[in-house]
Length: 248
Ligand code: SF4
Image: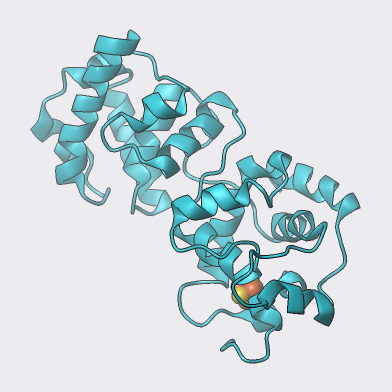
């Protein structure tokens, strides 16, 4: 198990019991803000950490590499992200090298990463901004990260977590879907989910949450009919405990 997973499991000493029916009523009640049972988020994250390995294609590391690998990873599978990032870093080990890259060469190196025709010029532009404004370094400030080409809230927060060890919520479509099903939030977009989860998920669980929800989304809780019948967190899940929802 990963160190993240170890910390999460340790946190389960304070975990709550699964939901009772009366808790369900609170979670599914009309349009009120969700009421999350005390201890439920810590219990769910502990159960997920005990089930999945919690590692990903981008790990804690040097900010330039974390930023570039995170952009490479957008809409791209982990295996491809690792292979493509390794090729890019071998040729362009820092922002100064990437800023002077030939776009066609970078496009070829990005083979395997989705939307490389867009990513190649953006990465070069991004590197030039880092060189011109930050002496080739990556800023850790959210607003400055968001001003970089190809960097949205998810990417910016992933960089803050994995490059700077800053507590942040890196919310992708899996985390958005699953936390809505759990009944922790009632939101339309990942950005709304990020803000809502700040009030639900204990801060010490933020950094590892994205990996665990990503793996859970791929394994059991995908965009189709979820596999609630074998899910380790069903006992805390509003959707999983609702007799009226489709499940398998
Ligand atoms: S019980 Fe079902 S909906 Fe809830 S987290 Fe598990 S798979 Fe997803």
